[in-house]
Length: 353
Ligand code: NDP
Ligand code: ZN
Image 1: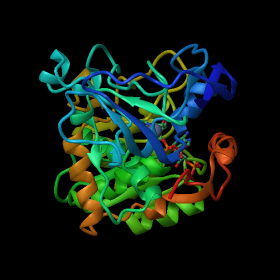
Image 2: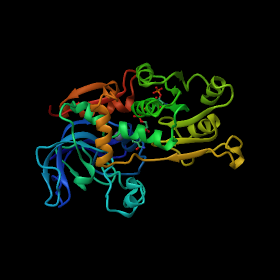
Image 3: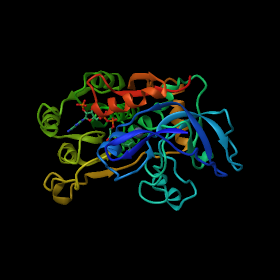
């Protein structure tokens, strides 16, 4: 089969590989549509998880099942499925402890385009199919279904990590597609004020639609100066970090009220350390919690998030700024994600309607 792979850090291209083998609990699927992620950019061009040779990229798609193992109960060939970016081993001790995304070791629930070949291929392998796949709602367009792989669950996980409550003032740092879903999630959880940080006008417009009330640009001075002046020097109750770099935590801690939480879902592609400002962190006693997390995967979450879309409570369509048709456009879409033109939010490549 053909797959689009990371050949080594900074180099990618189409390669031929053996079609993956289906174990008893697994499924083999073929993508109906794939989406490109900023994480693909970190992995391929920044070498953020280290060197990988001839590893097929991609972890966001919806798909059709073509083969299932003998122990798979709930899926059969021909089923159209939602595919989470993170596919844990559900019988692992880490999953039993509540951290399925780290099943088998830190971040090891993230298998596609990390520990095994990803979804930018004619066929891909899904472990623990009953635990990880979910049926795709019949009337859901393939490009929308791709947003449920990663953007919705990651943005919403940022909201969970920040523990947004009714009436909270919330700062969302970064309003690419992940941050936009954090805005939407914070809004659903009852945030009163949502301050969004980003500069691309398409993202600002989408953030307004998802419930952001105030906007700042990280290019117009420090985030903390702007947030503190907007909040009478008090800062905000909760912060979700979905953009920026290691230095962003300095600003976030300075913007947070004591007792608040910072939920980071940003993939820190570069740098060795995250610095926490000592004084603004309450000289170590400020009750300012910082948590960083990988999105949880799993069928139950996919079904629930999918039901938000089918119930009309969450419209993922505004995330999709570029739609291509056919594998031959995959590389163009990937390069677009690297270059981030001003009109880009999320590119999708439809393989088969
Ligand atoms: P984008 O690059 O599309 O968006 C990044 C956002 O951050 C933009 O709004 C950008 O602003 C803003 N930004 C850039 N630089 C700064 C800065 N210095 N300070 C503050 N804001 C800044 O990314 P995505 O939304 O696609 O992804 C966000 C992150 O989430 C990525 O690192 C991605 O790898 C990660 N991720 C994590 C997952 C997880 O499970 N934890 C899963 C999926 C993705 P501008 O408008 O100027 O571009
Ligand atoms: Zn992704």
